Length: 478
Image 1 (cartoon, rainbow, N blue to C red):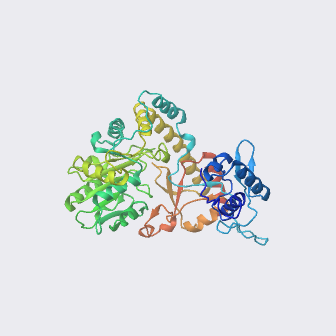
Image 2 (cartoon, helix red, strand yellow; image 1 turned 60 degrees about the vertical axis):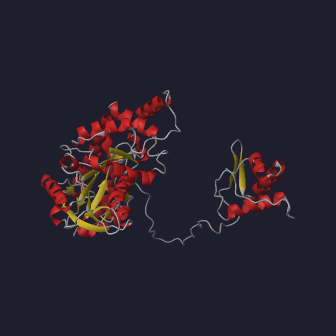
Image 3 (cartoon, rainbow, N blue to C red; image 1 turned 90 degrees about the vertical axis):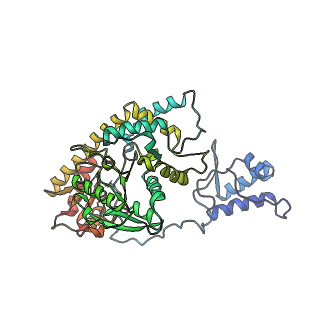
């Protein structure tokens, strides 16, 4: 690391004094944060064009003043506590007068957060073995870039996976590899959204989609959902609209769109010359029955676009998702993807080719199917622990979304506090629960009794933690 310092050999102040001043000022103004490792004395002397002895003496003076601390064998680091206050950095909280009553929350014991991933369930050994096999292959080259549409081998593997799991008959040419569902949403926006374009979204629904299209000037049209998903009979007459839906497991309510509404949505799209953007967050986690075929399987006129990812099954850090488009839209989608993530046609980037190659091997070897079975077993055990604990402490509970996904919805009985009050009480015993006003949810006003619902995620919680948390909740909610 090179430091942004200016040393003037012609100045009347010695070089050592100038260096001490530059470093101490950088520390007290917050430009050099506590714990930052400074360059070695030889490297810094070469950078500044001064003798190493000058740097050694400056470091010694700074250490004596408490600005830095040398660590044997590791180097010189900015001290954790500066001898002077940091005027531009975060200030230490003022001490409060002690009182008999404290409003501070206890330490967090259990967080029922949504869309969580348990890192302990990541297939570390298998992934490491597959990655090492790729690295040791004769064609390994970490500097190479891939095609804009993604690895052909991975796209072929996805064709097989989507055919078996979602009933989709697609060719590799119809699949584009993206970094996430968010990027897929942006690609679709590049294709269909312009100032004034009608975009229909679910309410309540995911807070991710509408803001992306609103920034492009779209006319956002919210449509309410119910126990069967998007209320298709409420869809307005809007020519050339884009409608974004989560039919397999509506977010956040956890319901599946009925067959009748799927057919009605198809008819509406054809009548309005509209396109449907099907967002699939977590259809891989079905505990009762099987997921329905994707909406894309009903498509007769190239109006349905499908997006999925591996964020919840492998982990969001993998940064690999996919977009399935009708054959007639492939070139348009590819052009949109290049605009977002590929600066030059001859220097395409996209998801790292090594990650794509390892994921392809993981799919083809059967490792992904094994991982899904492992996750379903673990999540079902955690779901059961949550349902049983709720029933044990609160009696018969009105629960939604229990047959799939990684969170459930508890409709609170009339005799209990409303959801925001329950959320506040839960925090007093170290437990975090979610209401319909969660930052990833939008449109709670479309649900008349939105304040009677609690959202409880369980993917990264052990059953015993869930049981203890429910016992704590019972103590403050009953």
